[in-house]
Length: 353
Ligand SMILES: [Zn+2]
Image (cartoon, rainbow, N blue to C red; front, top):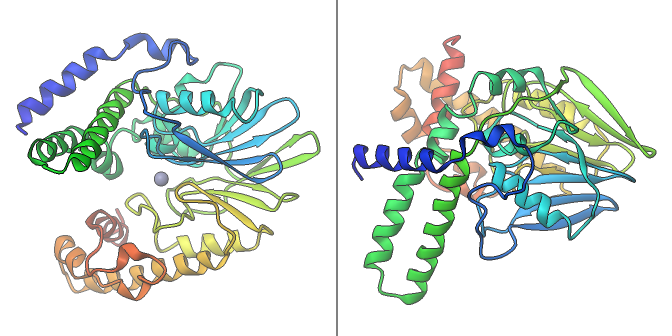
């Protein structure tokens, strides 16, 4: 697809987006990009009153959300990919509970966790670290490697899926591609309506919410996936929401602090929990996943530092990196080579940038 075509498509989508949306919080009318062929979320009640909401794949919703059901209200951890994603979550959540969301905790500033916030009304407190607030205020959730890789490529992904659909002969493959095209086009519409919204309350160390005898700890335990990740810990229920500090796969690393991250995970290990609600992937109980991630991060830091010190270019280092020793825990590492944006990030930190 030509650059001009991409640009005209983007302009057309911008024109279609309601400019006044940010001034009108709420989900009525439903924000653009919410069309889906079936429920967008599955709700996994991991303990009484604690729900992990995971996307089903019918719609691009971004990260998982966690919902803490209190006597009169709900606390929501992470706000999803877009106004549409959060509104669909709130609508489908009515199958679980009629209570309103009064507090939202953003684990970090990334678009797939934070871009639903604008639909929240003035009666909803949005909690984030001051780092998260500064990043959102500076517009850093709509730029950078993650946004470039996952959102800015959407028009090209649509074009590629259309080309594949037009040449496909298997009717089931054609149908699957048509569904994918619809999903991607909805995601483009949803993203065009985003106006990044900042937290109304910042936390730099810890804050505890008390709700009907339940203790909800919001904690900063060190740099990891970003410079200001928050975790949400419920000591009585022994549950922790980790955002992208600890996920089922290897988290996105291009905004991360790979050298410091294992020590932050050591502090996570000191907490007494038996269920982890990650930002991506299903809830899990096996605490050894923390060891697995620490091993990957430590190995990566050592190997990338050696390549950096040998003056190997970022591109060549990314091609050469061999993390296959971890493929048993992370199938995504089964081949030689690694995300260049992660290597670029580690080089930049080594260079003091
Ligand atoms: Zn993230």
